[in-house]
Image 1 (tube, rainbow, N blue to C red):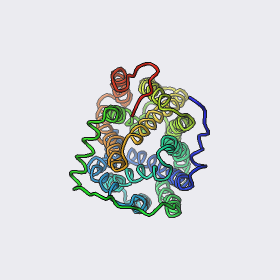
Image 2 (cartoon, helix red, strand yellow; image 1 turned 60 degrees about the vertical axis):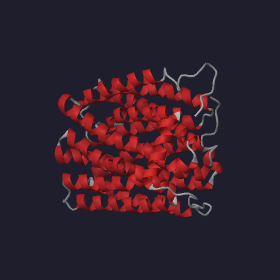
Image 3 (cartoon, helix red, strand yellow; image 1 turned 120 degrees about the horizontal axis):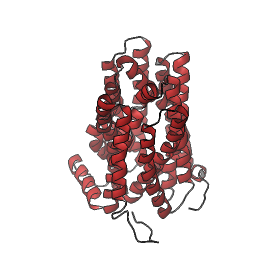
Image 4 (cartoon, rainbow, N blue to C red; image 1 turned 180 degrees about the vertical axis):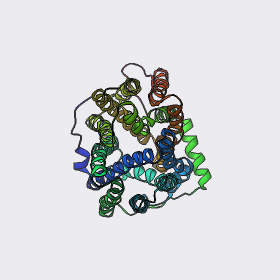
Length: 411
């Protein structure tokens, strides 16, 4: 795995550099809101199931609308779509601030506002992810995706820590206010981006046929089909541990909002290190090896976490889990984006967000919430991780992941 400059893509591509800095600063606000929203749901209800339901409400629209959103991302100017979506998300955060600050927030309003944000995100995510190749080109795409993951995890480090400070000093409503203000950074960056004039697709098909075309492509392309199955299992069974983290922090570790924020920050530090390692590597074979190692390590670490009652041990385990989770996600995303033809990119990224955000937070969080309610949060994490590890052991022993020694895996 030859060492490279992990920030080379930022140096080479002005548009991506502008986008990355603005997006990373905005994501700090997003993580502040995510942390505060989970804690607010717990304060309003004292119910692990309803904490999971709030997360699911924000992701249900992605399940419902992502297929059509992918068609829109392939048909329309993605940069303009992204500007509109980011503006609407800023308004959603401002509305959540007002309801909480005024004392009018209820679990019903929290669920409704989360659903509205998810509806906007169902279009924003595929538009944003499929736009990256226009910033950097195909050759630098894997490193750009890894750097996006590093920015995401920088925000995961700073956001929860700032949210904990803001909540303790100013109150939970102000975490939402900071998120609303943070959208100014990404919007300024998007208006500074300079891309060639957008060219509409030469051939348009009906939206339903466009969805069918993308499904046929994912089904009939072996590496894409295998990767989507892996992403589905690891998202549904792995990602919900973050949804349950407020309950885990309070009930198993005896922590308050500040300690909960530090747990999320530990995940973020690990994720940042993992993303930088991928950005500083080259070669598809090296990436595939990293994917396999991370796919074994991530569920194993969650099993260890489920049995942890010592705070300092939890910090270390979450650091390692964050690194392995991001390596798994970044390499999977890079393989998928490198495989897909440009005309299907928005639809594939919509399918990816359908799984990683939509199914993970609706099906995954719902199941995890039910199991946590019935048996405890530790069992919800451990059972999901055990099934995930079993699938990884099965999948990587079969084609197309299993390859002859010395061969470079194709995509």
